[in-house]
Image 1 (cartoon, rainbow, N blue to C red):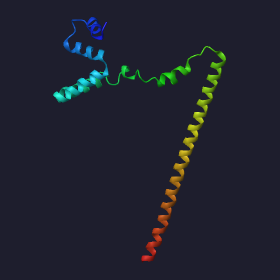
Image 2 (cartoon, rainbow, N blue to C red; image 1 turned 135 degrees about the vertical axis):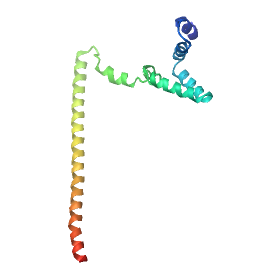
Image 3 (cartoon, rainbow, N blue to C red; image 1 turned 30 degrees about the horizontal axis):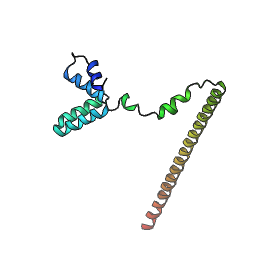
Image 4 (cartoon, one colour; image 1 turned 180 degrees about the vertical axis):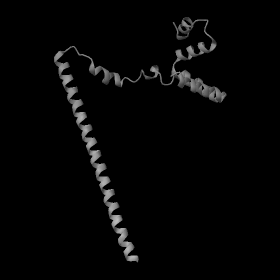
Length: 145
């Protein structure tokens, strides 16, 4: 069965022309939505603008369908927590993940202390410079008098 035939077979005839058009564009994918929007801008810009707002509002541009190509997180993020079926390996994996999280927390704590030390050093330099300028200013006033 062709995609057009499956579209017409699954689309009820009671739907309005806007609903049928939306269903047809959905069946063709995100590229059809973008092409329709571009054509709307070319022929009559308010139509293109209306389509752009509709696509953003209805999550056509940023919906789940658009994210299906991003398998990096599913490959490395969520599958890491699943059981492999081997209890020894799962225990090793859990211990390694716990150790890595602990090291990450320690490193973030170190970075925070480093930032605080840098901020304190910059503040101390500022205060020293300010005190130096304050002590130099009266000396200049005394020589002018």
